[in-house]
Amino acid sequence: QVQLVESGGGLVQAGGSLRLSCAASGSTFTINNMLWYRQAPGKQRELVARIRRWGSTLYADSVQGRFTISRDNAKNTVDLQMNSLKPEDTAVYYCNVESTTRSYWGQGTQVTVSE
Image (cartoon, rainbow, N blue to C red; front, side, top):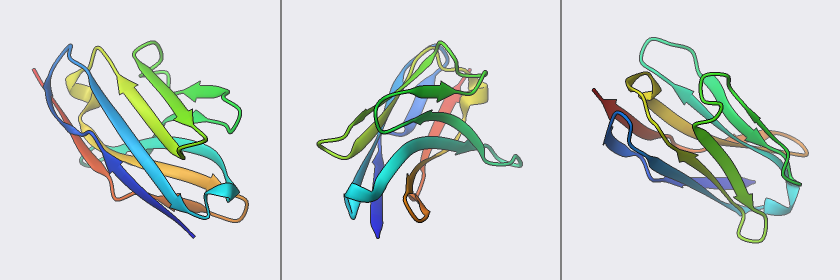
């Protein structure tokens, strides 16, 4: 089992920055990919960014160049640095990790970007 705790959400003005963090505990040796998803009201959950164990990354087109995902394998954490935020980035952001047998979800953290 893996447990995830997210932090760092909040309210920010358009053009501002936020940094989300997710700390994993439990059977962390099983973790391969670490990801961030988001879900806006009335919309489906969508992948924001993914980072593999050894660092290769993938981003949604909508955040490419503005968001940066990073991980610390020693601390079992994954961060999402979000710059140049837009109102359309408003959503609940979820940390997700993929282990050898299943995936795990965090509880979600609200990010609200005002005009």
